[in-house]
Image (cartoon, rainbow, N blue to C red; front, top):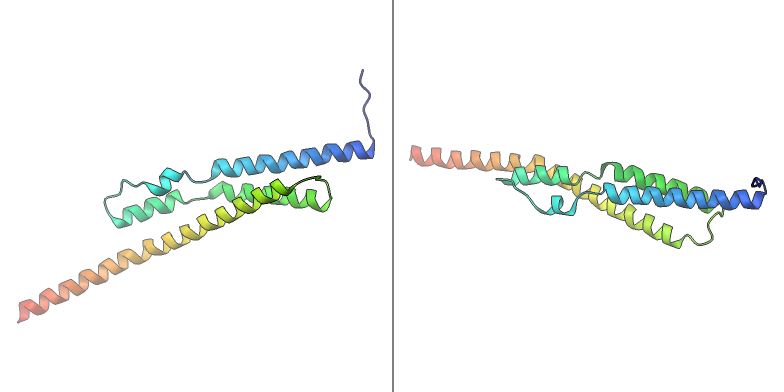
Length: 139
């Protein structure tokens, strides 16, 4: 029968491995939850508003944000505990995904803004065209 070890160094080493594995799991989940590149690029819409609504839906980073946040929390905990011998790869991947998710969220906000603005502009242009037609009819 194997004897359990309760040596502090052994336990700390196990905890460090578990923390690194947790960070890696969260990062993998974040990558899986990112929007599909084809969904962001391709559209079947018949008009600009349909394309914008499709893009807005495609740019939903959803659970990827939470997964990056969880990865970063576990990483910070491990880093502050000096649990990682070499965590540059984890830090780089967190920063990369954090930046990508931020870009996706920024783009989604811009698309949402356009989704509200484009119909208003179309309506104003239609009103202007109707006014021109009415003026021509009066002449």
